[in-house]
Image (cartoon, rainbow, N blue to C red; front, side, top):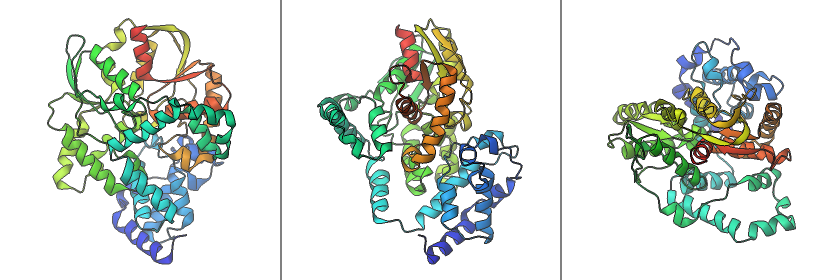
Length: 440
């Protein structure tokens, strides 16, 4: 419960910090409504639409309403998928407004002790420290390889966990060993005639839990003619912080990444996780009020490119790629599509692979409900969205679902698990799929 004093502080912060020009850019036309998953899934509730949320923000700024629990609930329920932005005729940067509003609320209300502990542990104690990410992943690896996981499954003890956590445990990937996570390269030569010198953003989860996908990505880049540098000083992109009302921490992580990459003399900085890439290209907005870092952020942003985009640019799709016969569909990463504007390139690559019968999934551009940690903190809405997504998967008759973001990958695996389709359908990151095609 937000106190009267907290509400007053939040309201004043809204007045001083929210971009009123951006709020006024919203014409209330409603073009965003059909693209918003929470608006559709809530039974067309206006306060759960982008237009409605902007109206609430504006009303708080104008003092028409208080920033009460209903306002906070509306903002919390937003996936942040930003599907509203490409369809907005006024070009409203809804994602920027959402992040600012969430930061104001979270920094000026008193969370319960368990929530404070959880947020401090995750945002301050874990994600900014890659060595701790490795340690946590290593513990997960011990759990998987020691027989403990198998024993818990046989005894049924996992049923004591909340359903969302128990389901997520079942779809976690097999993680690498500590030795594999520590033994990371900083430079890789091109394995074909060199065309580009690039840097690789390895990320935090991607370079631990999804290490094999990172390895597949760099292998593809090498075969496409890229010399690769991987700076050790890089860290978490800060997306989870920025989306969860921890803006100051996100800024610090952004500055560290900019400093780690800016003197490498590379053509591009390559990403392979849609969520990370989208936040990296927003560093200029994140640091817009910091004259010392803004221009550096702009230069950094200009070099960000998704792995699928550079592979198409370097004509990797013209190589001899083949896989065993399978029916393939593609689930867009919201942030890769809606923020980075990258959606044709993954499809060009998939359609170039012999043996892969590509079929476009209806509403493949609609959010799967993962959205960072949304599927944990807003499980009910997330599963509602996922259930509808799985209906579209069934219509596609695909045996392989390809994604371009780790959260999407786990969410789609969760959907397969919930539908009892384990073994009949697989989910794979596009980097891993293309490497299969190269090595088949």
